[in-house]
Image (cartoon, rainbow, N blue to C red):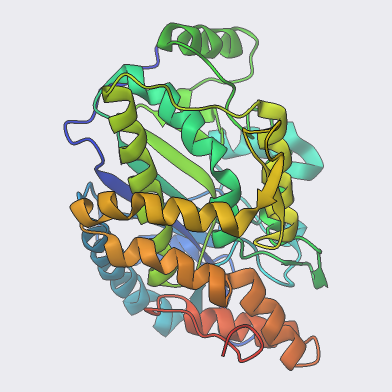
Length: 383
């Protein structure tokens, strides 16, 4: 299988893919309204896409240099979609999962690639009522693609803790900040990327997966962070989030980290690695505990673990000059606001607690936030 990585003409360029659930405005349950919505959107639109389930759509930006431009692109697409969904009594929900709808009741589209996922993965294929955010960042040389892929994956606990938005599952508190993460990693070829030293090694890996019947197309390598045939590295570890401020923060963090790594490689320095077994542990800890966890460091003999937020704040300070250059200083700074006041999983639990555990109140709060400029924090989460 030929995996063509055509370098991006603009290093650090970005694109966002935002998966949104479709919810009946009255029952607040997931509803299979994607096809009527897609039929009503301008024919040939490249901004609104079908996805795996009939109860979801994906908004996709064009290629942008600045985070605020990409967010404006998404806002325009959302406004277009709402001219269709509002008359249908359908609302948009940005979250890693629906708090109480049964996953097995949701139907995939009848499409060969989706049918393979459903049939091959049996029970787990029927649990994939989950929604994510994918962020592409342009890479200007193929030799950088794998170091940046593995480098961004090392920061997966930061991305997960900030984006985690799926604490409730089928009416229960899962105990996880991101239940979506635990479900998604059940599928083959999903999960953390393997450390590879050359593009030729990655190409051989793709060839072997094809020969073994594990994949039939490059995009069936569903790593949390992966090189893309678009000439980008794609950050896929994130839950879907409701607000534009959260989308901006996560996009800015992805863009700035990738730019920092690109400059390190240009200067002949290697991107430090963490063994995959520790990366797996850090990912699990962030999915389980969100911001309230310690993560394993690459300085095991000096300080084996540290609070996740301590490392996050240090990196935000380190990346601030790059953010100023890229025009995303405000968006990157919002990562600290999120970490201080509470990501979506914390806000959802606060709403549930304030309403006697009523998850319908949680869904209503998510619907109100989806497409809003900034989150709404309950006093318990930060005032």
